[in-house]
Image (cartoon, rainbow, N blue to C red; front, side, top):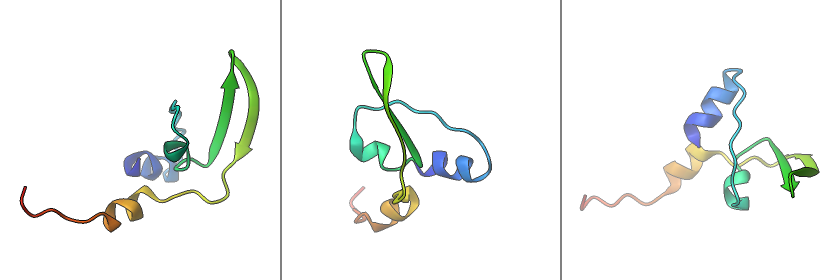
Length: 63
């Protein structure tokens, strides 16, 4: 997700498909489909930073 966000900041359009709302929270826009039709198209105002999330994960030095 951090790579996708970085590419998007560089002006690239990124499209990904997920069933997970937690993953969709990393995007700036969410389009919801049902039975092949758009039922919702919304901008995400509180986009989660994948880079910050990775940095906050605990480091396991055993590996």
